[in-house]
Length: 271
Image (cartoon, rainbow, N blue to C red; front, side, top):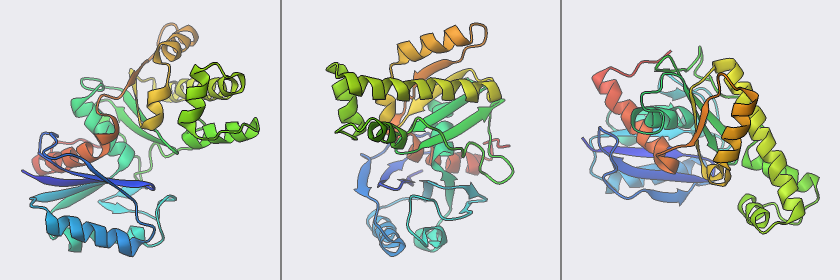
């Protein structure tokens, strides 16, 4: 089965053909997210016209319930929640929150495989959170489980740079200066890192998880050895393991395709 799968975020849309087992059949195509919903709709119509596929899948920013967005995501244009994807695809499709799609892919194929209690955090401009509890995906009553504000996002790191009146606010350039032993850059980064550790501890106190998988662009600047050591010192008897996600930035569109595949087989458990 060829699944045309998308991962829609505020800055870019990724797409690829994926099979029912989560294998990429094509290279992942990435384009900047259009700034109005008409252009987003047109982009999808163009993809559909140019691609031979059987079914479709969408991972998207925002709260999703019963295959529909419950409102406009903060990082997408007005009217996005009203796009008629059924009319565009003209075939069976699924829509899922991007963090939930990503954690599902990591649970089925990645570093949360065989984990009964796991969390995947997507560290980007904001932080996405997907939760596996007792081997099932946690949605909550309205689909909004995990939709909480966290202070270790890229936006948070930029705000720390502004707090210290630093000349650079680009997250990766700050990290490069950390490696070159820039004193202020180190102060900014270490405060962000402390926020990350405290956030992991807080989530773990609520969920008592086995593994945290970190994805997204900022997952590349995490010092995993240091973070794991800190967590173990603070939670000596029940420390979770902190790992980079195996599937990386493609987890969302792979997970969306797996949701569709599991829906067809009717074996993806949700709570």
